[in-house]
Image 1: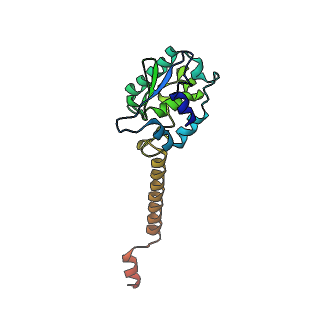
Image 2: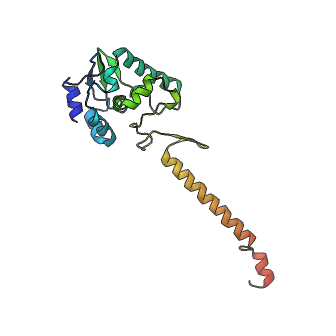
Image 3: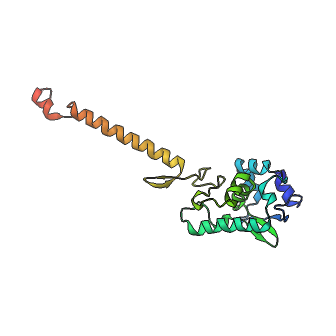
Length: 193
């Protein structure tokens, strides 16, 4: 939580324009610190961020950061399959990037070089993934397109297991039918019954 404290004390600022970060609790009263403590991946991501000038987010201007946030907002509005909504996107208010517990996952993703570089380079909208967002109690938001629609990896695993079980059941029934099992007429003719 050292990084959060540095942001809070305004020791650490973002972009070349030096935008401060302001933390607010959400409507339920949960604080950003509580959200980070509840999620190890968020804590690790924020813990790795030192704020040095080699980070991409430290090299860009405020205008470019505004552009990135707008691009994410356009993606949410235009894509119904987006796994996050407008409430999950941080806002810049009064030259401060406002972070709530709901916006921490996207904030953490922006601090990671590979995510912000992809957004700055104009990544295809269908490829915006924020790995810190929780989707249906699964820690990862990488959804897979299957014949059942977009499902989480856990759901996909369950569907595969169910399909295997059904295929095995049909195979057992075919074998039983071919070998005459469960055929009462044959048993009656043989006099077994």
